[in-house]
Length: 358
View 1 (spheres, helix red, strand yellow):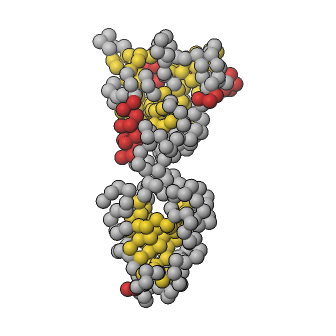
View 2 (cartoon, one colour):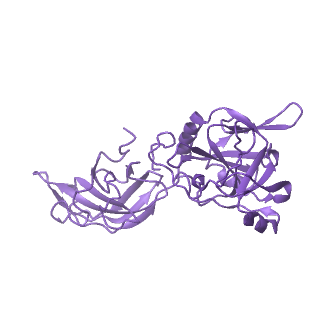
View 3 (cartoon, helix red, strand yellow):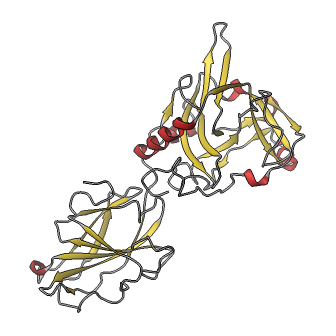
């Protein structure tokens, strides 16, 4: 069946969109059909769930359809749409329970929903007799699965471009940031914000420190402009990225511009961050990927390359000793418009979106 439709257990859905009757006014006359009770939501993914319930046996043989009223929790009134293309009422033929509800056009990852159900019997004249609505229950959809992340990874690989050499990772901030951290001599990981894809498993969960490594094509050095502040901490690439470091793909997104961003996670083998990433994020080969490579040369030294056509945001999961690098002031401008702090992904971009909720 078409991936946009409904999977096993559901014969079809009709989406009742804006302008239709609200869930509080019944499609037909209220009947003595059994009212769904003890609603259960299971097998939740980023764009699907299974639903089942209990019913009295009286009148069950008359049921031909189920009406499912689905709303984002932030919108407690049924059928009040943020935009006209998002349905909230689903009509399904009565089939054995549980049944699967799937649809990336009305289900988004990491989103809280409310759901209520009523049973219906289609009449000879085409109208419906319906039961009373069930109780309203709440649930939250899941993060992107490994399948979805691998789809994002493939899209990012397609535009990564050629590889350029680099030698340092760097992090820009205001001067106060480094003065504060110098008291302990360490940069400390913090929880990642909600920038990027809404379904990324690392947002709001994984702790780390973001670094950049992109260089200017004409100089081979880090750019002198930054959206984050005029002070820069630089550290040799091999301190953070070496043969004991594991690398994972975290996200691919843009912010309503032509610039695209790839988030990579660097986690020392066996670290807390490494344990979080295993099984959640696609692992990348250190010396054989399209974004960031670490290669051992004949003399035993390590050489490093980064993708030219995407902006890499490298998240290191462990504390970083400031004494292993240096802080200096850059000469360029602070380009605030390029900051990705809590940036929302453009849901309409065909380059970096996949066929699930954004």
